[in-house]
Image 1 (cartoon, one colour):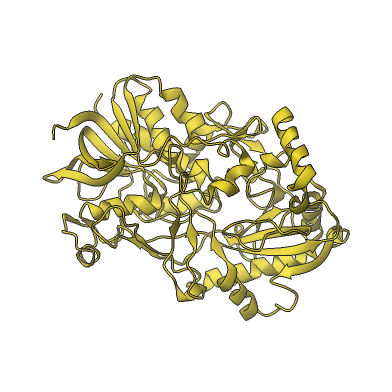
Image 2 (cartoon, helix red, strand yellow; image 1 turned 180 degrees about the vertical axis):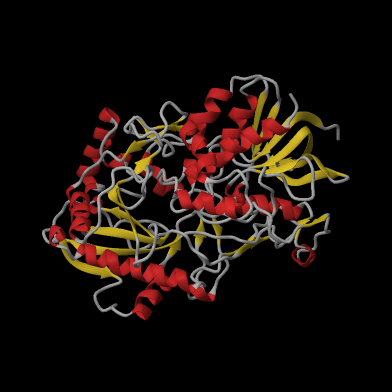
Length: 534
């Protein structure tokens, strides 16, 4: 086969890939090919924020990965959604925009990721943001990513925030500002009531450039090497195999599940893992696929006395009114994603920053996987530990690229994770028992009033919890024995190859991960350009 040639090949058209496609082509100096295994990412539900529930189970928009059964969670398999198509997980996520805490990035720098402290990454957060609701110099205006506060203010969320105040917690209108502590309304990447994905923010403005080519339905099966340098990739379109070469670099942006998988398929990884899957070793790098961390959440819910929750308003004639409201004014319940009101709390004295995050919704459902709403009024508080220490792995299991990797998160294995989650559930219960919730609270459904001991709370978490789809760490950045990329995101021991996505995070950020991934891609683009040609 005669291979085509581009300066840069970006493998993956998701959150980071779309940022790079824009930033690497803006000068006109470089040619860029972006390869995406999914399709264009269009669909009726994509721009409608409330459509995320449909997209989370759509094989067209979601890779539908699942974990291996693990005893820590009663041998359950747990869904690990990953966006499939241009825009990646920004097509299907809850749109919640959380930077994390200053200490998160300072920790990265202390662990060997020089240049990734909070002061180093803050300019990139400000560069990408368009958040006109704040004059805080820490925030950005005029960037490509449109950010707004959730516009809905139902009575239940107002009561929840008031109850948190009664329980001794502060309100905080901007958890992305100087301090994360407190309660208020989430910030989301939306514009005019519609999802604002990285396709809208970055890719669409770049598509008219002659130096950018985007190919969908292109499943990359291996990285091609000559000597110790990545020189291109092999990919499939249907049953046809094609090759393309990179003059400068191959950049993996396939995400924390698929970037390590592709490295291992290409012979880069732990020799024992590769041998067990029947793969030859090209470059031994034992950290590939390790250090997998995800946020794990329990969902507590209560029956509500009054008929004012999404359980009722999303059915029948009231749903019809909501649809009309959305299409006429771009407001109402169809603008809601996965979180309405937020809370960031410290679960014990002596902590410098919050260690638990809450997601309040005036809705309830029995199964987090399918999110089918209850028939009767209800409300839910999702509880997650911000910085889990439990580590798992994502590894190749077959030389066949169509076989998904084995995902073993090892959830709740660290005692600090267990203790924080139990304490967070206790605090959530205390908040809901405050006087502000008296007019609305009927009774606790899950875990239920009979659950009072730490052991019972923990068992509830093990039996019912889910990840909240924040996979990271599997190509960790730094200088330790399990590091995969250096502080410039270059693969250790090889030339012409970088990883720029959530997999490079050495430790978990304190909150939803999409904002951090956008920042990584913005900074990664500058690193690539600084090291590149011209």
